[in-house]
Length: 223
Length: 218
Image (tube, rainbow over all chains, first blue to last red; front, side, top):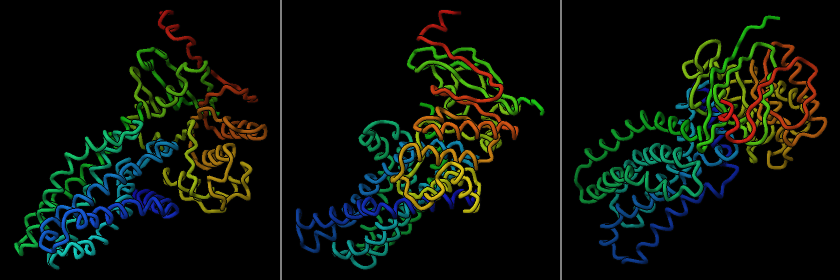
């Protein structure tokens, strides 16, 4: 079972590394959107500091949302998804492997580049470290919950709008608590509550989302 | 040779877009049995194969593996069954060897490179190990799938139009593989519109023709 997880994770990573331009898309989107705000609104440090948490979190969320399509689309189109569903291994484990690969390829790069953007938006250093923690806890939830939506819409042609409608409401709590944690930290207040909430949501998503996704995939396959 | 029943379909019904494709369809597959699903385009052959794989839910009836419903017996059934559909399942960015390996990984089979190369040689892809999938013709992609079923160690093969895109040698290869598999006690359920000359006993299930035909018969 662990081997099945590991093999599929490795396969997805290998496929992504052979298709690097696709890999860079969410990251470039994230950086571009955040860097455009000072130009469009105002470059004064105080104003930037005030809007930084919201801008960075919204951009990260949209970057993940745009990359979700990649999660199952290719496997669905070439029939590999059928083979995964016919695996003697639990589908949940395979879903978890695919979601892990997705996070490593989109969420993690965002977390790594975010501190730079935080400094660019003149966030104080303690807020930058909270930004890293909040994204580290929040982005896996975005991938996990996103997978449920993708598995429901993968069979729909141009299901992008539908996907956003299904997924965005579920993303809102993550956005609120993630951005709020950074906001509060830049005022020098404690943020343990917000981070604990994000951690709890991550634990919940980790245990339930793969199950929901595998059920949704079986419904999709029964088209 | 024993003729134990491995697989049973009991009074299956399938409705698609308000059309009854088949109703009360029952058949069984014993060890070393080759079963052809016949019927014109749109008669529900692919739907039937997806139902017996458990990828699709039958609107009525059930599918049994060794006397147990496949929904409750999924792990054992899937460890002993391999399905090849219309779609190639081949990743253009992976090499031939990696493609076979990732297909085998879904079945938790770890084979050595040498074993995979033997199978690739058998299906006529001997020197193609390191060629990426996107550089292959569609017939060669189907041949990768032949190598996969050869290595899958499955007792039951479910093949949907296995001869698609194969050349004359490919068709002959598929036929000899089915015969070999039958010799070893395995069974095959397949559909095809091309002539398959199998030199063995073969049973068949015929699906209704025009829409509404079957409903009218009742």
